[in-house]
Image (cartoon, rainbow, N blue to C red; front, side):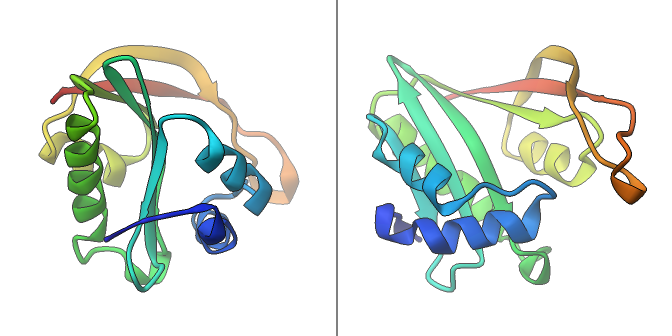
Length: 147
């Protein structure tokens, strides 16, 4: 696992776009990585990444993704473990994140890593269905793990 830099923004953006319907641009990623106390981890093959930020003694996961072709091999768990370690080393006492309540794979990943639900944001995620028509919004679960 490697700490990513702004130079990795295009690769991270391509990975994000392959993983999400509305993936972030290289400029979006670069702006995040330039922020104070932000960090990102990418694996050497550039098939998985995680972006986090630390504020005071709390850390937050902005996004984590593994390329669809590389899923199911433990890369998400390894990225998450590395991010938790770095956040703890940098003084964070807890890690937070939001996850779509319908994303079973992500929920399982976070549960295995020891995250617990601390809140719900009703109707937080808006998705496009077939032919660009909006589907019903889904809730975001707010999760926390003490470090």
